[in-house]
Length: 79
Image (cartoon, rainbow, N blue to C red; front, top):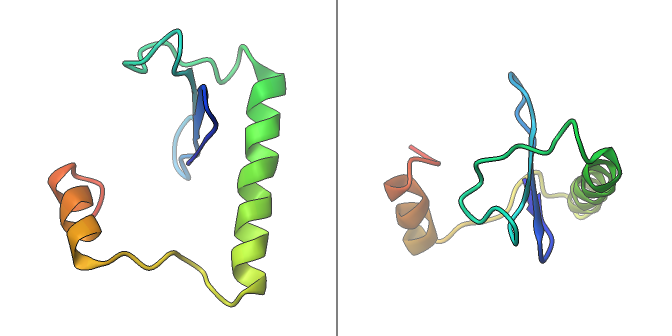
């Protein structure tokens, strides 16, 4: 996923992607992925660029310390 000040894009490998306007929809109830293709494409490009930059640096993922891992585990994002 990637987030700007007002938009959040979530890429799902096995399902539909999501795009939310966090200013108008802070609870992420209205998926704009198919309705705002300009914003979606901008965030997709930014996410791809971030992935490319990480690979160039020899990293496939970000390091998470144990406190961040615990917080994400509590939210159900990691096991």
